[in-house]
Length: 286
Image: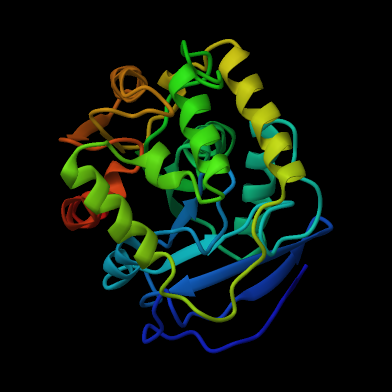
């Protein structure tokens, strides 16, 4: 493995953290680091079609005020080489390879949506590697509706395509006045970084991710009793992408989990309510 050099400093923000690269298992991973070094790092696993530029700056900078935060693009996405794997299990294998290549022996994981699927596999496959887990807008394998293109999802995606605009405001937020305002604020925030951005996820890469998500939804349920780490499960009360009841199911089946549901919020509830989510995450990780 090889890792590009660069200063480790807590002074950088989500808008200024340099994009670095690390080679592991034949993949050149793109990643960024924020926050003070020391303690157990928090590694973030992002959602369908997302890159390291799609994390909400308020979430990144808020958590990095106290914690060492690592964000990275998995295989075939954003600034990372290779082809997107066709299973969540293979994505988890890549995530483990990346963490190991960084020289980390213990991490906390925050998995959002697809990233939450990956985090579940990592925690069961390498339990000694993971200390605590944060799941946002996600659900368990084999849960009804996970990985299926429901009518709301198809309609929202089609509207975004027709407008030639990012569908996240439609997919992640409610249609109430506060939800629309939160969507506009979020889109402005993820545009705050103006340089050193990675490439957007291609349609081919997104299609391969969809295959992996569909397989996750169709597979037999995992034995979540194997995940003994403390977990924080968060979602909005009206998730249009992965039904909120999936978060209830996940929290119910995990042996040690706390559930937080945000009002008048959808799939991106942790971004809409970042002012509540960040303190809750920091308190949980302490």
